[in-house]
Length: 51
Image (cartoon, rainbow, N blue to C red; front, side, top):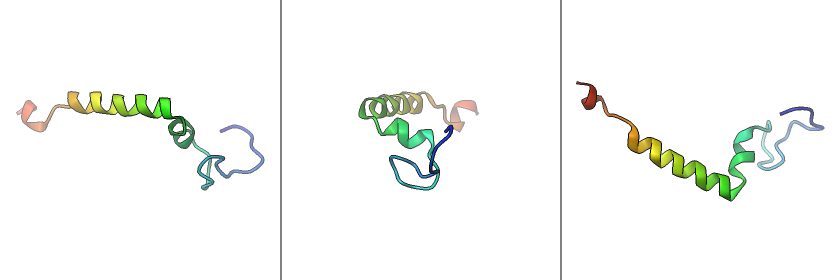
């Protein structure tokens, strides 16, 4: 993500810094993401709906 002194992630201290740990590192955003996952999961149609 841009120019960095080291490629190590600042939050997870793992290999490469990505948006995933940066976004999920904030409780408010993590809660919103979990809410969206539930809403999206409820809207998914099963294969039976297409048959």
